Amino acid sequence: MAGPAIGKDSSSKKVGHTQKAYQGIRNMLFHNEIVADQKISYRDLSERLGMSQTPVIQALKWLEFQQLVRHEPNRGYYTAPINLKEVSEIYSLRRLIELDLLKTTFKRIDAKGIKRLRLALDAHLKASKELYLYDRLVKDMEYHLVLASLADCDVQLQTLKNLFDLLYLKYGAKFLFSSSMENADAAHLKLYQCIEKGDRKGALKALSTHILDVKEHVVRGVKHMLSATRIQR
Image (cartoon, rainbow, N blue to C red; front, side, top):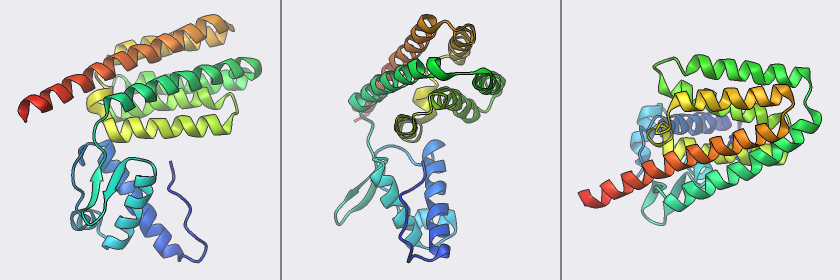
């Protein structure tokens, strides 16, 4: 998700630096280089990104707007803590949105849309055989977003992208990969086959089951992590 727009009176150089800082911090979150509930050092981030603290602070404001970091007056910014209720709600809302979009997709999908989905599926299946986990995670997300985009409902699609941001940047691979990639491969393939055949009922069931299964695995992983953290304390 792109950060909130900057006013027209801002220089293009300032916009560029802030956008660079924003993308840089997002990458750190995605790769778990900044962990949950951690105090964020402006100086450390500015040194790692090779820029002044001003665009870093502006980028953190964007991320606060997305609920990926929090600001405490007179103390600075912190990464948002892990929240089991939030994880559960994200998957529940994802399921509602994706199922609703899929119903709309069945009313309008054509051969071109089927081809787009097939390409996204092939990219996902190819990535699932690679060792680089983060690429596999991205291709998994892209498959879902391509499918969602076929409904041509911009507001719902943007909301879904925001939910993926929360999942991928806040919770990351250590929780999302608790689900077997082989299971995801099979689920995505089955979903595609149902859509290709025009099996609306089968596709809705396949998508619903897939999201609920992933939710169960991720919630279990978060519970385990929170329990381990309490024991360590």
